[in-house]
Length: 121
Image (cartoon, rainbow, N blue to C red; front, side):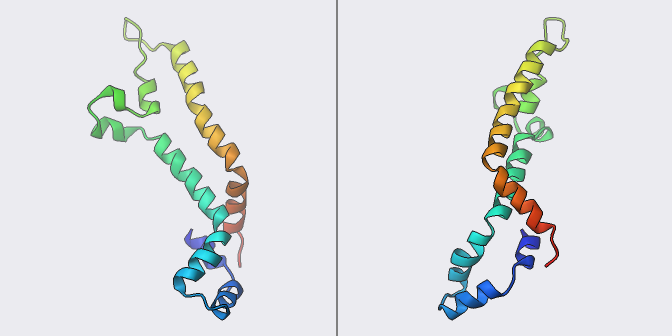
């Protein structure tokens, strides 16, 4: 986000000041609409980070019913303590669907956000 806001030009801010906007008005009506792609990219990265948490549930949670999906996938074992590969792979496939849906819905903002932060202003 910092890199994105550094690359913004001063002209939209100056135009907002000429129109009589204060600091909050400049942020809300000028900068925030321009930052939609960057916000989309940060939202996707934040969602993926929270979705893929692995060590934190082991430390903070005591109930297996509250584990995150990646950790819960490792709990599928057969009567001998071996992994149930068919169940684990089916559950892993289903757990990837929300991530794919979020990416498809926010793909345009994600690509624009990454493309704009890499440019030198």
